[in-house]
Length: 239
Image (cartoon, rainbow, N blue to C red; front, side):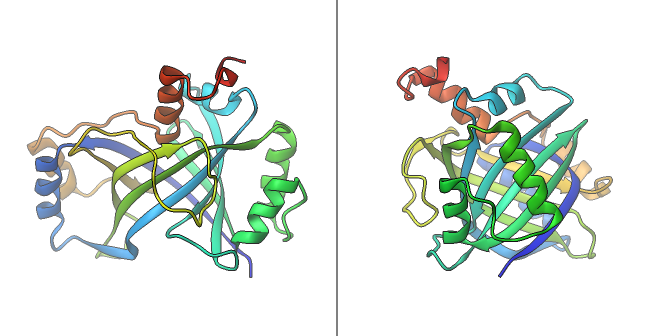
């Protein structure tokens, strides 16, 4: 089992209060529905170099940045599928390359450094990334509860709500329980609008009516900055 997908779109983030989220959910009635994943607990393992080169560059807000992660949409067993994702951003456009493999095959490849057990263009891109950065290792485990909505009109317009965002710097397993340090204040939700083009008029009206404005928020970046503040890495962050 192995298949691949690609995405190219804009992703706009907003930090919401509980009241703002309720207003938006009302505005979405008749416009959006839960997608195939619906409500899920997403687990991610982010990879970086021994000097945190990728996330340090990302926080500088360059025109181009990239990251590599392995993701699942629930607690998985070794024979169940996970997503190996190479995510790039250039001038506000997000490009995602996604390869699907059994958890055991994906994790073994990243643990041993052996090539991914599939031949494809996306696999080649991931292998080039791994070779270029050389000292990649699991750095942060990030989890969150997500509600994902897609447009009823069949367009590519999507909205996701992420809550209970937590991170940890150990136990890098997509089959493990959820625990870790929270990244959002109580009652906060991270909303992402994902679209290949413009936004529908109804959502722009709702955002304006409830004083909801875009924000710059990276889950991996917030975890890294929190790690710096609390020095959980034992000094490696300052190498």
